Length: 127
Image (cartoon, rainbow, N blue to C red):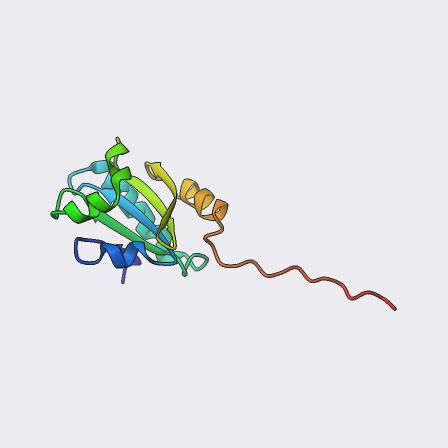
């Protein structure tokens, strides 16, 4: 089962409200979107680090997404697809065009979207 969820007019609100989510905006006819989808799916198939992050793809040309577009006016500023959005508790934290696993990782790590790091061990004072 793929961790890259299909997001559509029925589930976009629930998906975007997740504690941590990455949403890819794409068109079904877009070769760059297909390539990024394949690269992301391959990464997610072996990834263990970002299990607490939901990953989804929404095809802008497949469904009537009027409510989605009205609720997310930032979509109008998107020039290129694929386009990615990092959401934390429903708030857009990062938005960037194109693909690339390292670019994705940089953004996830920069926003603290990965698993919580273990607190460093503090030595006990010697008495």
